[in-house]
Image 1 (cartoon, rainbow, N blue to C red):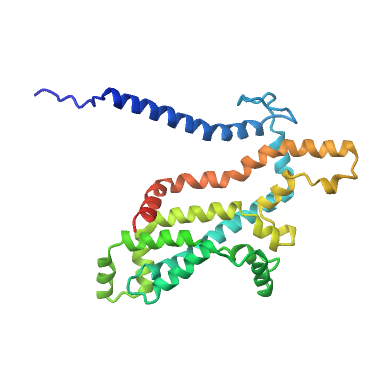
Image 2 (cartoon, one colour):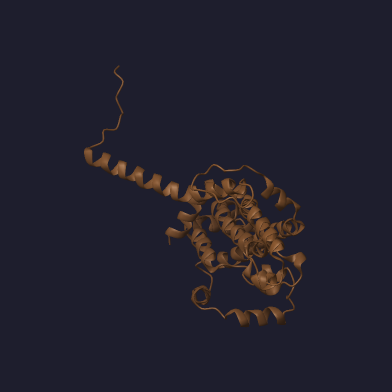
Length: 297
């Protein structure tokens, strides 16, 4: 028997389209990848050497990382940010699931009205001062809960999860579980959530990145430096406070500025490691979960 030739034959217009597609995607990759490589390369550049557009360090040095690892505040902020990310993601996922599940049920009375109230918060908020007063009156000032609770749920993430529950898990699964005497709580934890791993991974990644990068709530509500997240510590290191340095000697100012320049790119790399290490584990769920949850329904 003769082997069939399954090679795809492209027309001239197909070749033009593919060439344009490769050029566009390659350019897009360079635009995204170059700044990342530049930061990594700059983190290994010694002193205040000004880098050119080349990605090769002019004077290789690990002084930036040594300075970072010698800063006690950075390690304290690192541990605090890990705690805020882990605890905040767990709390946010729990609140989002408990809100999305009943709203995904067509037999839930008043679900439409509650959904409207949730969507209103996407366009209107009470503002920073009323929120601060509420946090103060609840006795949460200078508490870790002040960082975790006020923004515990994203309505957008809740809508995505609700849509996934409604469209990707057949209603027959709920009906068959009810025939076997399964209640709502057992159905949620034993059946629905195991079938919703893709969307849980995606929403969890969104919450984890948000909690890791957050600094504004901590800057407003926290007073003790020992509770500061890493982003707030880095803000103090990277932003030169001119008002506090006006009366210092020129030599001291130059020494402080040089130390900041040495640490600048190193702290960016170190602070990005947890997110970069987390993403590969949920990448396989990312496209599937976000497309199914956001497009359908």
